[in-house]
Every structure is written in C-alpha cells, then in structure tokens.
Image 1 (cartoon, helix red, strand yellow):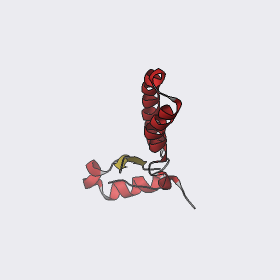
Image 2 (tube, rainbow, N blue to C red; image 1 turned 60 degrees about the vertical axis):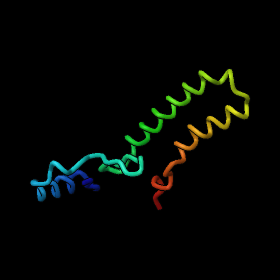
Image 3 (cartoon, rainbow, N blue to C red; image 1 turned 60 degrees about the horizontal axis):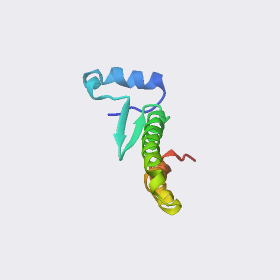
Length: 93
C-alpha cells in the first residue's frame, strides 16, 4: 500500500493503521513506473537514466559496426522508447 500526501498526514494515517504498517511502502512499482509517497518520481527518473546510460554504453561498443541509419534505429529502440514510456504519468494540469 502506498500512502500519498504531505508527510504529516501520512504519519497520521499510518498511526491509525498501525497494525498494517508492514504493508505500507514508501515506493511502489506499477507498469515499470516507480511511484513514491511524495509523487516526485525521483526514483523513477534515476532508474530510467541509469538504464539509458547502460544501453548507451553498450551501443557505443557496437557503433563502429553500424551504419548511421542502423545506429539511429538502435538508439531509438533502446533509449527513446524508455524515455517516452508512460510519460503521460508525469503530466499534471
């Protein structure tokens, strides 16, 4: 269970449900998106950046064997798709 809201309110609700405290988490993952209790998405952004740099390093190793078009396709497949995945979650009115 993820409680979302100001820290004081989260603590108040946690004290009401103290018997369920082992089920209350500070971060949860849904559809590969990491939600935290403040909805800052910092953990998610760090994970996406880490994964993207991992793939960029691997692409750099095989880059000498790829044409320009193939390299663009590989970057699109591995990097851009991760950056765009579930990006509508970040939007707020």
